[in-house]
Image (cartoon, helix red, strand yellow):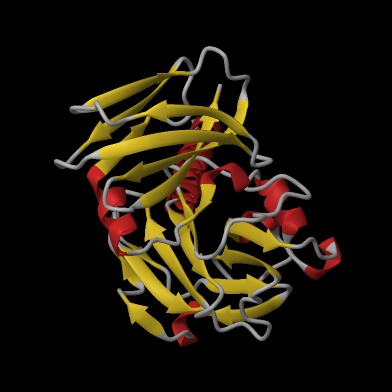
Length: 264
């Protein structure tokens, strides 16, 4: 009987421990970088989860220099990050956000050599020595692919994934003018990733001009007339090979937006 009770006790302890570990991983995985602006040394963090997360104990890391979120200047938002909410902070590491090249990661603690303590990562610009950044931990966690950098697009960059998607593919330039901002808010481009069709849906009454699709090297793949689009335009992707592409859309007011998408 004593042996059975001990076994039940151990089994109960195992389930409790498993729940705590799984719950902790779920909480940590909610927190993602969603915008990085080197010119102002600011980063935006979003809670993609369904519960509030206290991120006051979290840390920024750039090129192996560190700064706690608790001591960072908050531009907008709260360190008690509610579900679906964002916070904008100044990245307070010693190296900051270089305008040329840097990595940026978020850790749940100041123990930086442990990959499982990292909750998100991105890097941009010309390549720099892997020993100068935290790419290895990011690769280990599945956040990034070794050697990938956001290249060419002007900053700021925004995360365009759904919170579970990782890597350079899901980062895009978000440099928009006034007309561009209006156009950006007036359109929905989906699905992403796409297989056979990419859809452009008008959320507001605007007059579109055209769309151009480019591959990742900047080569024009196709041009599409949008002047007759009433509510939605479907673009066939049958003749496009699998890969990463950009679609650029213009309207009659001079607005221009570009979105990155994946053809599967």
